[in-house]
Structures are given as C-alpha cells and as structure tokens.
Image (cartoon, rainbow, N blue to C red):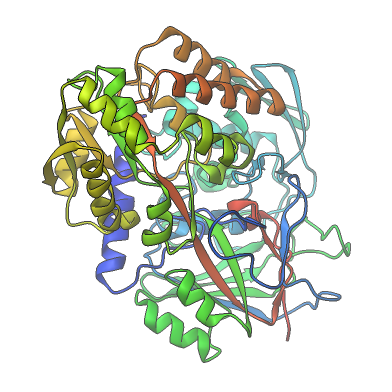
Length: 565
C-alpha cells in the first residue's frame, strides 16, 4: 500500500504543481477534487440559486427544468494531460473519464454514503461478512468501437478477469486493495462472487472506485498498449478521438443500458462530450464566457460568485486538508499534555475566514466532507476540540515550557498551505509555544514524513473518501498499515475501536463505530489534528439542466444532465 500511496502522491503533486505553474489552479473535476454539492452549510456562502437538496440517500439536482431535450454536444475543458485509458493503470485526466466509458460493479457515494448506484451489478447479496455475491445486469452492452471488441453484453467472466488482472499487476492503482483484501473471485451463471480475506467495511467503496472499472475481457487479453489512446466499453459514452495535449471527443453509446428513472428515456441525453485541454484558467474562463464551453472551473468562491446570475453554480466539498501531525515517539509529544496544548491552541475559525474567505468548515479527526461519518460540528467545538488559549498556556507552564522543531513543505501552494502556515505560527506564539522551523523541498518533506523522521509537521493530505485512512493515522500501523508516515499511540482501546470501524459492515452500525472511535481517540489526546476542508466550484451555462450533484464522483454514473439545443 505504501508504494501505491507514494506513487499516487508524487504524480498527483507533480501534476498539480505543473498546473499552477502554467497559470491555472483549477483542478480536473472528479480527478483531484471530489465533487458533490453540500445542500445547506454552516459557514461560507449559502447555496447558490437553482440547487435543490434532496435526501441523504439521493443525489441533489442542479438547475431542474421541464421535460429533458435530447441532443447537443456538451463542451467542457480540463487542465491536465490524459495519460492512458487503461482503466486499471491510468491516474491522470483519463481516469476521471473511466466511468464515462466503462462500468463499475457498484459505487457508494463518498459524500452521501447512504446513496449507492448499482451499475454492472443489479443486485448484491451477502451470505456472510466476507462474501459479496453480485448479480450481473443483463443488457450492459459494449458500444461501437474500432478495436474489434464485439458489441456484446458484459458477463461475470469479464468481472473475474478484470479483478484478477488488478490482483496480479503491481502497477495497477488498486493492486494493494485487490492483493490484500480479495481472497477469491469466482463466476457462475449470472453472478460473480468475491470473497474477502477478512471482514472489510470499506470493500464497496474500494471496489466501486473508477480504477476498478470493468473493461471487456478482449481488451485485457489482447495488446493492452491499445488502451493508451483508445477504449471500448459499455459505459454511457464511446471514446471517438483522443489528441494528447489537445482534447478528446466522446459520442453517446447507442447501446447504453441505463434509463432515466424520471422519464423512462434512454441515457445519456446529450449526443456527446467535446473535451478540450486548456491549462490556463483565464483562457478557459474566456472560452466559457464567450459561449465556447458549457462548463468552467473557477479558482474560488469569489470568482464563482462573480459569474453567478446567468450561470449555474455547483459548490463541492474538497476531501483534502492540511493537518498538524505530532510524532509521539519523540519528546515532547510523548506527553499527552503537550499534544493537548497544541489542540487547545488551534482556533480553526481564522483558517475558515482568512484562507477560504468563509468558504470552509472545521474538521474533526474524520473530515466533514464524508457526510454522516463526521462528528457533529457543535460537539467538536464544545467537547472534543475546543479552542482554549488559557488552557494551552497553563499546560505550557506545567511542563516547563514547550519548544519544538516543525518541518513543513516550503514553497508550495498546494491546499493553500502557504496561507495556513502564518496563521498556525501566530496561534502557537499566542499560546506561548516556541516553534523552530524547518522548511523542506516537497520531495524531502515526503521522504522525511514517510520515514517518520520528524518531531512535528504541518502536513498536506491526499483525498480521503472514507474514514479509513484518517482513522488509520491513529493506529500503531499507521494510515497505510506499514508504519509509514506516522504511528498512532499504540493504545489497545484505540486499536480495537478502529478495527471495529473497519470490520463493521452494516452502514448505520459502522457510522456509530466511526463516531465512537473518534470520541475515544480525542479522550487520549490525538497526535494528528486536521484543520479545515474547503470547497471547489463548477460553473455551468444556464442551458444545462438536471445536473446530478451532492454525491461526489458518483454523479458521473448518472448522466441525467441535458442541454438546451
């Protein structure tokens, strides 16, 4: 798992840095930031007009209108290179379009875990906590293609061959998951059975990732290099042309199985997607305003608000954050009082107001974008992470003063880290805590962090779509299970509580287990303190209607949007 995380981290970071260096801080929607409207909010701008919030187990709807119209091409842009369309290897821009071309078995929303889309699988049965029996939907038919793949229905054998390929391919993005957690895959009749190595609460989240999409087996058993620039699948669209560095064209798959629940009509409504690669955000903005694009990704809430009026604004939680990490293996962080002093010295309100201009929310140990898994904001502020400068100063006096050496990635704008740093330092100064600073290059910081060679760090974090890794930080084996980056306190109660959250299959019970684990960790004075998570935005032309939102990248599987023609 650690090698995967490091590879994914390095490539994401390098791409994101390159995008910003080229003048665009916009991220490829659904690739580096997970989308999903939040409905109402506490803190930050209120919901924009045209947003309809439904229930926790259903997607929200943006810009709802009358009877959908069929036809037209949806024009959009992204600020990244494509990479390969190999559904198990690619991690660049193409990976955001895997669900447009291929299928997943099921997909559980990261933002609304109560909502699940059954795609290639029409039904799921669980005879026990380690056995998942998926009934494969008839009629999920491969679209027209130039690769010689028959226009046939996908079947259980396709699933088996795809998963076994992931298990046996170390460079696959989900290799660690498939290798560590999948014990066997068997197909029989219209079903495929996956047995896990142990009860694993996050199995459905992991199997539904877009890196685990199911391609026709003819693609995998033939020359896989063909998937560098071509694809064939049973998803809603067919990849027609790909021009690396320029763009791609997708056509409506005439064989696509899914119908709109509201109208009974075959999806998608649009005839295709025209995707342009535009690395400079100002150029993309100009193209959007002039009517060349139907969708644009602004840099922040202010720019989004400037565009409000004639456009449809989608407000999306960002599943990443900056956190303060303490290495309890080194003094003075082996003393829980010191860890508590830092916790009490952190006031999250200035990060919300200054860094994000009010467009963010405080995080607990499990960040708020993962929906019902997060603790109640009022409980967090009043009980588990109260800001108390007096207590922080008092603890400092009790322990004879606090002075620590903090490393951090210098010269980076990732996650607005540069704006977090001065606020954090001032808060520690106000609490009487002395900080010796150690700025590092991004590469050196990652290496030091990975090897636990630090006292404390103001740390970047990747996108976490479940509580699994955030809670893993507080276990003795660390976030990746191999002791890298950080080790938890080694407390038997914490280990048991996190283990329970990882093995509880039933959703409501799992939510309670995740809450209980967080509360217990707080009682032991945790060594990792997430700060806040903000929002990202997408802007659509007013002629684009019925945009599924609020469910993260799960919306890519719904394809209910349509365009006035």
